[in-house]
Length: 139
Image 1 (tube, helix red, strand yellow):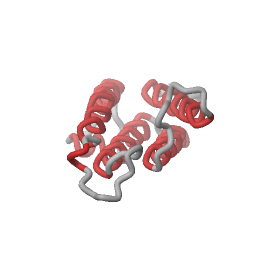
Image 2 (cartoon, helix red, strand yellow):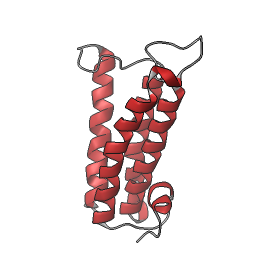
Image 3 (cartoon, helix red, strand yellow):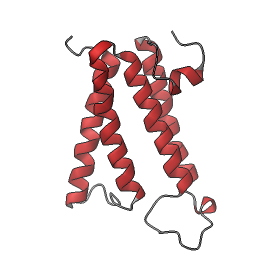
């Protein structure tokens, strides 16, 4: 059991129950895209050198914060040597974030190679989240 929301989302130590994990992931699933939408507004990017297809720095940092919080939730659901599964979420999540920040993945539904890479990373990360929350990885 965690004692505060800060510990729940930003500490890699401790354990959480399935209910705490589901509630935390639900909060992040809503707050993540909502924050990116809010921070990706043109009002947050006042620089003259901004790239139109890349996200604003505020949106990028918000998404990075959400990826870390999801990684922390995954790590807390697992124990012992199985904590490596949190990296199976974190690595594709960070690669998606870096690609997005550099201006790739602008058309996720197009048959371009960028889209195939995006969906491969996304499916890998999603499968890792499901396994982390269920905690059913064979010991």
